Length: 175
Image (cartoon, rainbow, N blue to C red; front, side, top):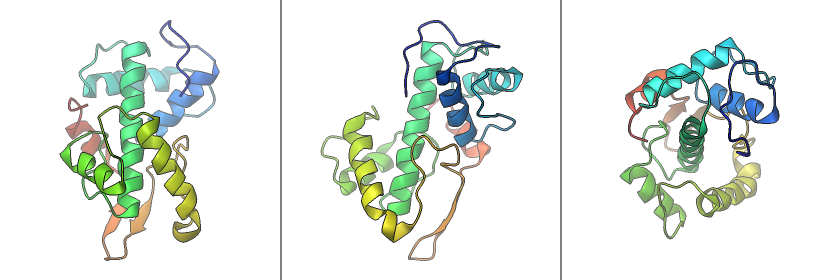
């Protein structure tokens, strides 16, 4: 994610980072968002809801704190979703780094997992995604707004579906 802008992103702003924010919001289940690079009233509403759910100051603008939290939740959900598809993770897809996710990361082969979803975690998982595409079919990339919108039946017959907004709300302050 490019995070070069220091000033808050607010209603009416039009730039590339807005599209990244929109894609993250779409992936996290916020509705009425268009990935068009324009920060409109629907984005302001979604950001206010996200800020409220995560215990952040509610402004409707994307400041550094909101962008950092949004990015962390998004990346954590991508890791949870991908590890669940690979059969390493059985917890909720809620954007919360917890002991179940840490165990799954260790089982996957990440030597020193931490709550910081940096390239030392995302990089190896992306490599495995690329390696397994032929086995699992199409797997969304971490930039894909359809990332968490899937239904998947594992080899043991367990059905996985997209996380609900309720699961995300339950985990709001655990990031």
